[in-house]
Length: 440
Image (cartoon, rainbow, N blue to C red):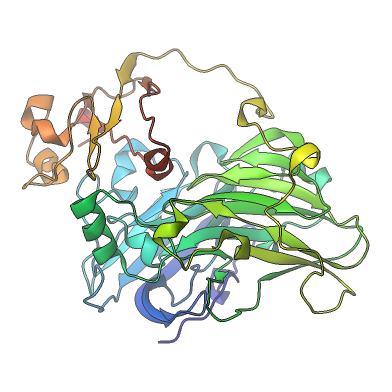
């Protein structure tokens, strides 16, 4: 199967706006693809990278059937999905996707249906990806958008559809099994070959794959939904000669804030309004990234990570301006995250329970210690122990670092600033898993 770069909604996803149950089928298959011109086997949803766009409206229920058809022995052949940022009610936690903790992976030639009610009127910009080890690095990732028909900020933009989604991500020529094995053996974090924009990238010495083109019409305001689907890379987004007004952060509407540069760590999402108010021409969308020492991978050239904003009527050619890393010096008006404010403010609830997690990286090793414990996968998976009746911390190995908490309590998790290694801070992508005893 040949891979087709796609961010267009699959035809079977096109449902009437009044529908409250959204059936989706994702065939997880190996497909050959070359996002940056280097051909390799990948793990994909429906044969595309990124995977098909999933859309819903506020209050809908997603019913996602996953058919695992993986057959390439050079990569993991089981799989599991996570719908990143969506709330999952405790009784349905097995739909969250954490393999061996809340759910079993989907085996080859098996199927599983995830049912995700969009609770608490949750709307915004999200994404889905494999939750089995680091499998999503092999390509299993895509955008998930929950629209709000009554968006209080909709007067700020004219267009918000499948053409206004920007997915940036790191890309790797090698598959995850040797990458992960090398990291575990040496403690040296792999460095990506490329950054991709909606599935398109370039690397040093590689073919000049055409840059992704975002088409706009002069005088129109666009809501661009930016998603960093990386495993590691931090992207800095900007558009030559244009400002960006942030109106959503990680699924939460925010008071409009205008900037011209935004840093996105892995998994972060922003909605920005860009007004096409410049002369008709082609402009660079800059998406440079950092993610380790580029001397460890000579394919990497962050300057090549970009796309084109093309006004209607402009020639079909690259912009004539230099490929820069974005605004700098006195022209830079970068986002300061601490200045973001929710559109509707509400006080944080008082916690019933406080948990402090001290994170320390063991020098020279691929080993994280949390409260002086380095996690080791148990011989009997956490989920199996729970199903067999485990109901206290003593029922789990010390190296599982399992916290058992009562149901219906507000838990505050505190992360003291103990991770000082910049390289490992970029890598950190921590999931806190909570087991509610009386829900099983």
